[in-house]
Image (tube, rainbow, N blue to C red; front, side, top):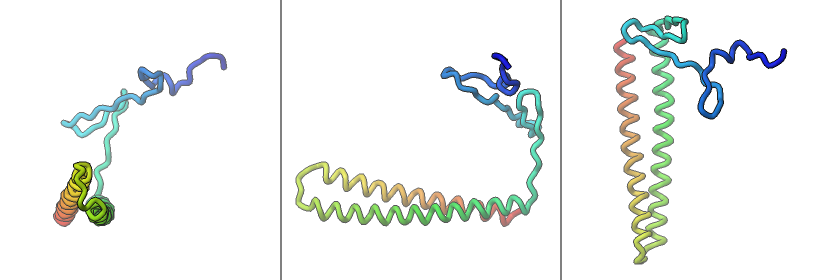
Length: 130
């Protein structure tokens, strides 16, 4: 075989680290076609049932994520309470800072939960209109 390059390797670019990199694909948004090197790929349009099924999977996964967020929030609230009790009477600013950071994390999880809930609602409304 010698030092010949495998045919598939010639189609790959090399990164600065010398690794093979897949060729870039481009999308022409005006004709909904994907171009990969000289090949043209026409993606098949999903049926309404396939779209609804995909949305159902996504909303189920999002609901599971919401449950995990709610559990995380509960755990952090318990941690915040334990920290408050443990550091009660402390004059160290670090104790207040840690407590504040836990409270901030709980708020941010609440915001994330609200965003996920809105995404689920929007996706379900979209599916219902199909």
